[in-house]
Image (cartoon, rainbow over all chains, first blue to last red; front, side):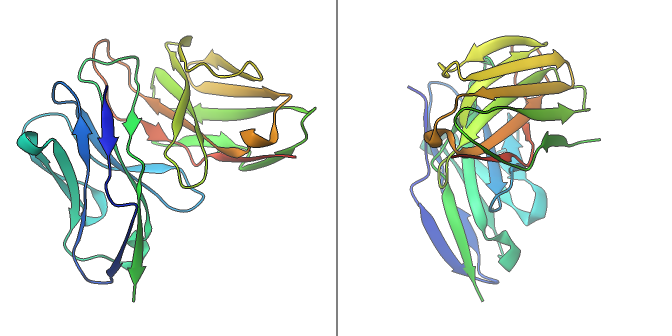
Length: 115
Length: 115
């Protein structure tokens, strides 16, 4: 069965420090991959996506993610975290050949930023 | 216009009430989605509409009744809900190309409380 694992439930980093959020997926082929961010009480905002091509993907707000096929991973990174980055982050995958538009989400990683 | 709007922002209802949630997008997207999200959890897919037709119902109880009056609008009619139905209800939309999937754009959600 397809699944997405975000091993870290909660991460705390200092403002200005670098950040890496982990995401591993289980799927027979390379799926579509996404990272979404959700501030408290808000909807989800797409940070970046990977469909094919260059395995290093640039997103909004200074985020990037690297797809590693050999590790079935799609980790999210940011070189310098800002206090406004505190939020919940969801990794999601979708089958390469659309199964009706389903997204499979990881359980999420809550990011706290300390001054 | 690149956003999905949802009304109302907050809704409190009794178990015998009938209410509706509304979602609107003007991006020309032909796939629209309803998700339910409990606190500290990822969104759970409820329904998918493709070209105004219901294509996925994730075994949602009949007290939730979706409706897609036209390509821009999606409603969720609520009747005889239970307190455990209290959650954030998210709407999303995406382009719909047969056999492919592109990213979903989410609305800000409706915070529903059932008393």
